[in-house]
Length: 258
Image (tube, rainbow, N blue to C red; front, side, top):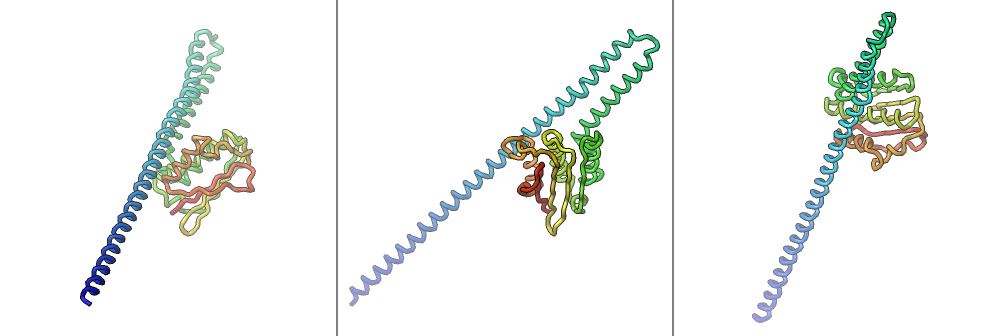
């Protein structure tokens, strides 16, 4: 009888020991899986941050290149024309002085306008003073001055005026400026419509034009401009929405979380 009890106790103890070892091994395996998954997530996050930083750096270099090109093409050309005009001054008869003066003033006015435009693109003054909504209206008025395109803003959200901080307002302003530039450069449009529709905890932003569409710029892999837009939207926590399926022109939608 005692031998049977001893055997039973030995078997029970062995079973408990095996069960404990099994639990320990299972725990260790699960911990290893968890650590491996955390390491993979961390690596993915680092890779994403690296790509985001790379996009920002490329965007900054592209912006510097665009500024340099603007200075060379607009200001540099105007100054060269002014220099040639001044060099011709000694060859002019006395009766041509008035025409010379008017020509110089016109060139100087163009230089001032070009410099103001470049300065406005670098640091839009309206964002700090009037907020996002005021700065966007100023930008649209400036873009519409040529008469080639008209821009309509339907702002039903007080949040886009009062709820955005300076950094987020500037990022959103850059997004809208890039979209307008895309339309002007690629879409052959005459009208742009921008709306802000407020919900309980978000604002839906819709941008459309009546052009031929800009397929090349909609695909992020085909245009640095769209990468810049998506990067800025990620910074402010916005969510992209699908393009309007029935719209024949260029459309862009995203949700701005409050």
